[in-house]
Image 1 (cartoon, one colour):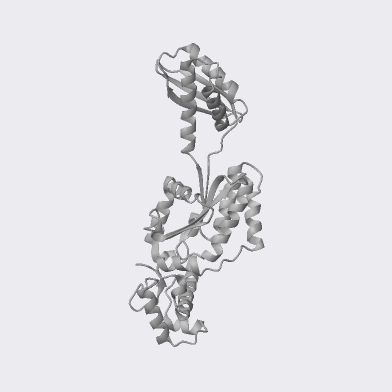
Image 2: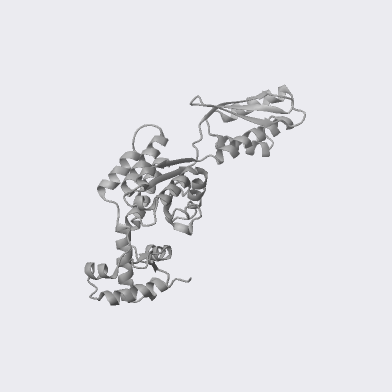
Length: 347
């Protein structure tokens, strides 16, 4: 069904549609014509309002969950409202202060991220999400330990004392002396820099043939770094806070939907993929219900905003997940503000 642009609706239809959407987002309940005639200044009879609501239903913007019930917006109707009618309200001074306080707390960055996500969850009454690349440690030492004739253990030690191991395949003809040569070279190049910076330096040296390595050791250096780079790229940090806020007063009437949503929140890899898709472009992304396959069954909405550093790099994504009837006009600016706050933290 092709939905008409909001400007093609009559003034009367727009007014009725706005009242239905506002009331539904506030209460979660369908709205009847008699209720609209009492709460609005439209000066229309319930019969006239019913006719307008019927027209809006035929356009696919409203739906009646039961024969005798009032109307509620469809996902198409919510999309039209969000894109064409929503009047956003900026976070209050108290809300901004709550977010900034958690982002500025002392300690590890991940603790500040978790605290900020929890604050966003509490203020929005949704589950809060933040996705950031796995932090790269500053490196201190790199070594290869032979395991067999064709495999070695690559051991990386960080300045913070962390130790990680990977198994790598050895190039043909590799001996212990070449393993030691590669280890010494990498330790010299890696000391005091991150893995990505070390990889750039080494790739430049190998391409320019300035590295004092034989061909077998050079091949091992490239393989060792590739193992870490590929693995680290697949392991972003995803923080989810406030799942319990999804079980609100109306959840008792729709327990199946809530259970489905909580199950979906367990699939962190899928959520990470969804948030990563929101990192493309500048604007806040709003996924309503079935617009996103992950949350189609639970009928949930996702609001996500890329977090960008001063140079324009995407350094994370922050957002919320909640029912489709969430207060978009209030939550969207709140997510925007949180993204700007985290940009200063992650820059």
